[in-house]
Length: 343
Ligand SMILES: CC(C)(COP(=O)(O)OP(=O)(O)OC[C@H]1O[C@@H](n2cnc3c(N)ncnc32)[C@H](O)[C@@H]1OP(=O)(O)O)[C@@H](O)C(=O)NCCC(=O)NCCS
Image (cartoon, rainbow, N blue to C red; front, side):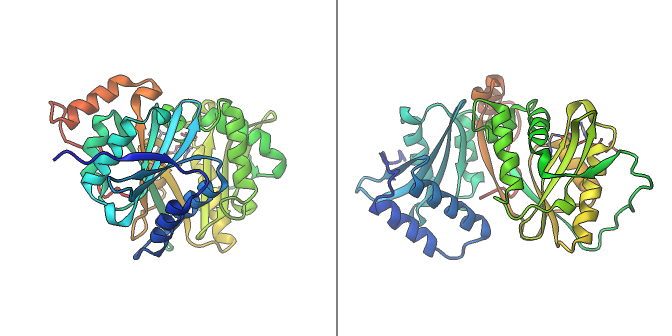
């Protein structure tokens, strides 16, 4: 059945329909922390008018969905939140079609579906057909009883506590650590200047945007005035490892592991429980390090993620591969979505 066409209406100033829809979402039950977080972010952005907002209206002018548009140097990053009565595969399909035919939102480099239903598995194929690939965020915790190596004698890697004076050096390290990964750029890039982008991210952590910064869990390695690795922690539902960064020139010599171990020891000594972190899959080097150290998903798992337009990040051939896969071609399974992923 062809889904009914939807109308897109700009809504940055939070008009009555948007406020009403946000209120409906706020009253919805049951809701989890991920929903609260999504809703708070959406309300903030729409009411501040700092990002573009749109309402999708149905044939009877009913508000079906809120779209939040973040404009980045490589395209639009669009989040959409369906109204409670419209969380069906057909409505989601209509929203995707409306997005396709909205030149003001093109190119769409990233897409985020901010509702648990319909589950992403049921819409994965439709999004993959548009050339997007799913990158899931995974929450891990270190179970309380996990045995942990004692501090090595003599501090062989010369780790030292992070200080506020390290802010600029941390930004340079962050830029170096992430610049090689096009997916990270697609998901997180906000500004054309990557160093400025990194400065804002580091400042957000140290200034407490994600919870108070915990200096006793934050360590760095400095060689000749340059940071080669660092770990940063904040208090957020326990001790959250907010960043783990190793300069590409210093990888695979055990620095990432040593930083993480020092951080966990520092957080445990400070009584921060649980020790947790979030990473975006696939990040195989980080994942194998975390799992080897004993980190495991909490129950229930927090799951969420972004769809990335592969053509926008210079990998159109991967998008073609996805199209073949999604249309039942010779490439194997129908979806690249990790099991259980939803938001
Ligand atoms: C993830 C990262 C911090 C690892 O740092 P590192 O100093 O190279 O890691 P280590 O040398 O301590 O390696 C520890 C373990 O990590 C895993 N690992 C690290 N690099 C890996 C790679 N390229 N492939 C597979 N496993 C890898 C291995 O399990 C390794 O143990 P092993 O050497 O005994 O096999 C580093 O790659 C990095 O900065 N990446 C970019 C930033 C990032 O993704 N941070 C994490 C965000 S959640």
